[in-house]
Length: 93
Image (cartoon, rainbow, N blue to C red):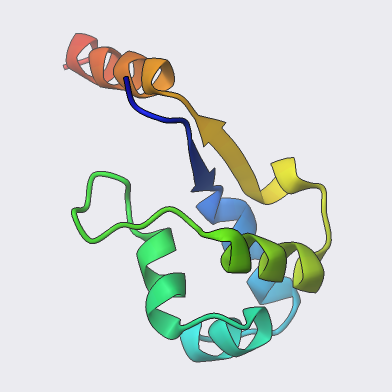
């Protein structure tokens, strides 16, 4: 059984960066205190093999720079949710 994963709500994250005047991944990374690669990988679709879930420094940076609550920018995906999403996609084809 897979462990639950923390996922980034990319739309909310992008909206917050625009509102804050952060124009590119370099500026976002500097504000969050993480690498540009971490910013880029967290925003990739979860189906992309290069995707990484946000780590603790990333999460702390987002909450420090943009404020909370946690649920505004992140959600917990369990293996059951992942399975349901896959079967929903297959059912909708």
